[in-house]
Length: 533
Ligand code: SIN
Image (cartoon, rainbow, N blue to C red; front, side, top):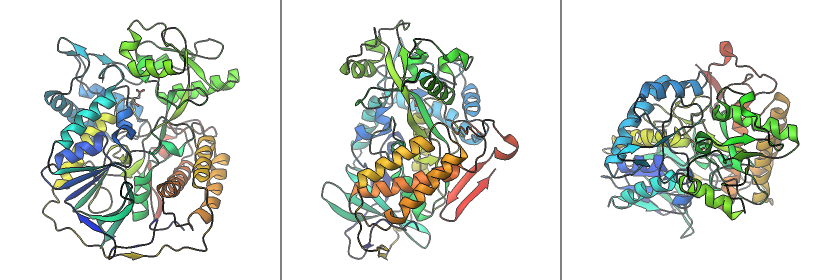
């Protein structure tokens, strides 16, 4: 029922461009991969611009065991504990050890983290047993990191960077990925990119949910493309909700970094009562899923749609320590030095994604994936705060190095003619379809789930697919709507059989972890679902 490709095309008549490597997405993972490929003819494409990447918008920082008394072993233990029994020990080992080397390399190359007299300043976030988070200009790690990596990439003569380029589909010949169908939004044309290997680093899928911290272009397109081409995806039932995003009618769901709580911010309900110590010994620094559900409880208890962050106990100079948060809230008349900030949870990070090995290799030949789009197994059922930038750095670079081994290959051909199996044209309001997907996901497949509501969602998605998949769109909004429908329904179908609660997957009808049956992964491909230890 799901179309193989989103449009009709004939590679014989489309313009074609050849390169050694194509990197799709240029956040920390994509640029780390691309920099490993700088001696080859490599292109990096962005769907939008750099400020629309999740990396650019990151606030908290990068977790890394660089502090006195801290060790990669301790970081490994915290990551494994947060992953709730299904994080991959080998992947985590690579993350925490290579992470130290890669961070040292960044510092040696000139990236300056906050600190004084040659000592880094570390902040603390939930699930970490010590202060381990490095940051830049307070809460501006993302934009500093992006401009550092982006200027390195743009100064490499072999790396070509293109904005407003959208991946519609991947093409294959004899089971290897040989091409990509790209929509170039600036010149309004579709072309085929042929390369020796392709690296998907296009980020997560926050916009599958009504409330999200992600920029609006993050719609799971790369995962949908890989799935339609036959790649395996894993752990799709695990989606992390960030407990504290700004909540005021009409304002974007701007992230209020966990580091605010790490520095002493307190959560209060609408009655002004602190509640987190009733839920967890770590209070406001409990794991994110615990804080998120506690907030939902208190929104219900007080009949309100938000709770509040009280920053009055933070000793630091707030405008200096959290410049972005300070100025954002000020725009809405909230001075964080004096007033509490209204917050509520929002979809934040996808632990699931395209299944890869430790080198970013997917189940398809010549296709690599890294960063949030990939599932290396490093996060298991829940991601430890501030581990994702480190993951992008470590596994992006690994994917780039592995892909480089293909440099001696010939670029494959892909003579494909495809006719979209279209029926009589029907009208589909793309924005309405997207809105409907987002609100169904938020209501039925969000923070708390149960069988009946999951089944309702699966039925609704099936109904929508019956007509939406018959439509051949010719614009990005239409492509996104179909990609969102595909990934949303896969998440829902993966959430239904996992009849237990683990990490971010909370089932009201099965509130306990079931280790005898579910210390396992759910893998999906076009061939269906399978369970793997
Ligand atoms: C935050 O700053 O709270 C987000 C950090 C993260 O998601 O790792």
